[in-house]
Length: 148
Image 1 (tube, rainbow, N blue to C red):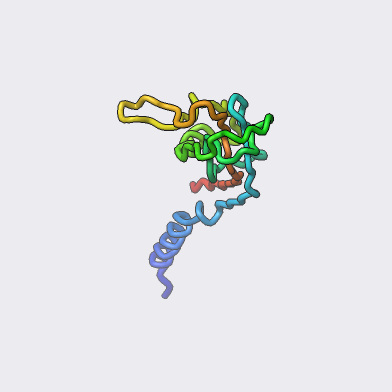
Image 2: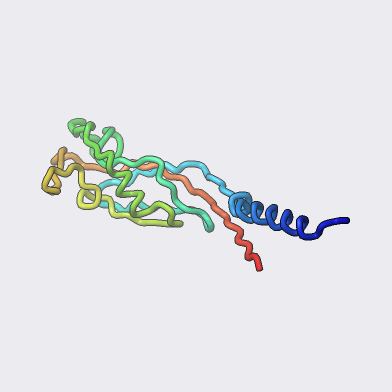
């Protein structure tokens, strides 16, 4: 004799396991090629992804790391060791997980250093700075299934 109760419990158990892992199984992630962005002090940095994609910040730095960027008069005397590795945190807070984002590039946004009382100071006064960032676009498609 076949026991329908044990079959019913077995099917319920299997179904509960499938439903627990189904969201992970049905989530698809696609990462597009990285985009390098240079935006000079005073400009607006514009980050954007195609529809159904979100920005993922890979790296960001604000300061000066080379003479060739944002130097139209080709001055050779700028400090190229001027950076703020915390700029990635600023850019992530403003742009990550959005489809598009526009950020003013200036010292007030990407303050270079903070001292103990949380005041900011410019470690490279007189040196024009720029934002050097790399970001990608990630597509995440979630399929939601309602179980009645």
